[in-house]
Length: 471
Image (cartoon, rainbow, N blue to C red):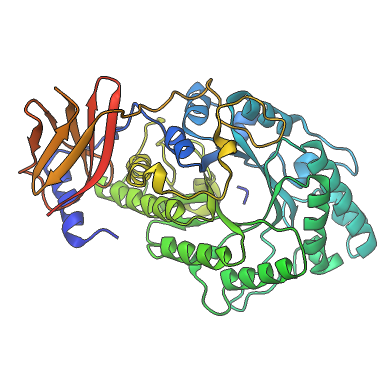
């Protein structure tokens, strides 16, 4: 792409806002930890794009620092698409793609390649010279995939081999109009693209990527059509390993996380990974400047639901957000939406960021199953295999609790292994609601309303976080 809480818990969040416990400004309740820290521990990849301003050296310094500190997978917004990499026939330009790969290698970040065969952003010479000529178009596409994938062999871990090839009709089928590949070749181009990509880099993960897959598996839907095509590809030996659901949605689309869960389960039966590849959750554009704390909390809750699904489905491996900051987003100019990302226009983390952190903490690493081997997440700088582990340059180790333990009984939190631990309580959006000092081995939580919370106990460098329910 160019680009549920119970009523009582909602009421509780609203009460926090009205009483001033949650202010109008954003804050980061987890300033001492990062998404990247927690993703690594859970053997998952969570990331975002490098946008065109970054590639053109026209970006604020905060962007790159946040990017490499918070995330462990990256994809180019536009710079590795057909028109960017082969602007003239058989004349390839890898300058910007190489810049991203070098940045990723230096910072231990996994790289996604986007996208090889797509009906949009194809260099103009393809249609001008070869429209409707099947053999010529096959040769052009084969050469493009071989040269691009071959150039990045061992450096790009995963490719969107075919992008957005399903139409938007109620009865889904392949996109048959306004696609130089389908109109000139037919559906054969999809199978061929996967075969050529696999031959160019047998170790790369190969994805089919599309939008509107988050609308469910009803008959005639894009998602159900893609599942049937994956069945065919697998039966015919086509080397597809993953499906990407772009998931560009609005704040009102509350059913989409569970639709993504259903799609993940359907693909798991086919031994195929599902990745969230281009997520943003925008507000209607006309709401800019009118949004309230409750609106941002609702956005955060929806982000958390997607992260919950991502961590709970064992065949989901990558969670990519289509942008880092609202200051640089395609939503306002191209989608009629606004403020859909984790950081506001001043690079301050929004409740959406805190919600993702809360979800990660609510899913202990020991309980999260990953589709990837543990070796991908070892600390190492050798990225020649294309599957980079984390670098000590960009991250700091998470605090490890070696002696702390806690137990909740009613509204009394008992703490063992600490003499003077600090206790912090956060709501489900990651917003602080209570703090205390443990001096007698326990802390009373009498003033908390019923609901789910995250509790963090810290003493010195030791830290322990746990999800609890107050009844």
